[in-house]
Length: 76
Image 1 (cartoon, rainbow, N blue to C red):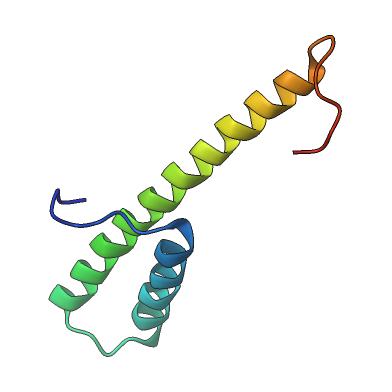
Image 2: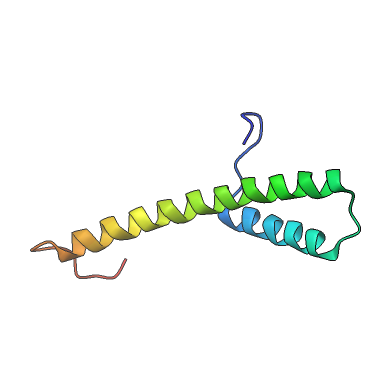
């Protein structure tokens, strides 16, 4: 994403990606509009993947702490 754009939350990116897909599936766009939407969708998908990867890392770390001897047995 461009430096001047604020990275959206996972939920914001997912909602906008859903809208991009809906618009692409509806058709009626010029080739240029379709390409621009596709590119935006790719960027939004990457943002979602970054958020999900971060969540996976946090979850793995929490699970590792619980698995350690004397680890905290309380749920997250």
